[in-house]
Image (cartoon, rainbow, N blue to C red; front, side, top):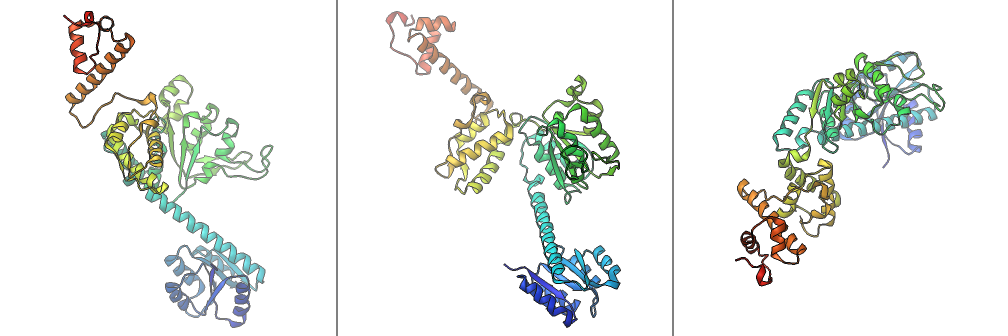
Length: 462
């Protein structure tokens, strides 16, 4: 589709050549002669750029810019002004204009400014749309939990989201630390500003300083251009230091200074820059123990852990598993476009029995795999995706504690005795000796579990 440009100009001599230039370049051009007409047209038509003269009958160009930006913030506006009124163009820029053109200008300049303004406007609109999606996605309303430990975590997140307090989120790999960090940012006062995540475990030690602080052109071999660091990219927003425990000890003192002073000096520069950043750190290590052992700076630990939040592993909040599994089911079914709507009771019991060494991330992966192989509208088989290291005794959570305990004991006794029978070739004397049971008691157990086998008469109990 052609980009649409609205020209607001009352000088026919100037207007017609500009209109032809834009139309030849492939733009669809609309024309009005006053600010009032422009305001009315924008209420019923969509355009990507407004080119407006500064001097107009009625509403002048500067006031028109103010009205457009108030009602259509994503719409690009360029002010056209005579050489002697450049000050008015600067005023229009302060009101929100994206650029200005000084009359007389040639066709090439008009096309360059128009294209650049439309592209910039599209980038801004895309950025705002991404922020809106993140605000909808990374909200506490979308984070499900029924367990008391996670409700306490959510309460802490709510209490700190609107503040600039430095937060340290710690817990095992896969529990959702980064998700919580994003929720803090996109729920708080900085939600319209950048969120920059730094994976401290993925940056080589020799690149840490340049990645975080940025550098000037020529600062070192290979520095062919000036580059902003992560701190500068996060200015006004939040910087997530993911897996902060992996940061080299040699850089921790510099990080501490930046957090305390809110200033940094890029490599190769002699000028310190002010930064306005909210810090959140995550780790799967016990940073306090690391600090006491000397592998992490004690002063940095206390500076980061203004508000520590521990995210419990999934095995400590079994009640959250059904809620999380159902949420992942909906997401996976939507992505794979499969009509899977439910998790069979036996499959859900298997999920709840498992101890999840990979935590929430592993649960999400298991559900996605199960959705992919599902034949009908329900997940029925998840055992093939559960590794042996995470298995817990089979427990039917629909039973009372006494009933469930009895069931587990019975399953153990049957499996144990069946194994001994196989080892001893069905000879009860050998089974009784190894099990330390008298023959009568053993016979009763075998009968109870349907394991009684034909055996020599001297093996039968008296």
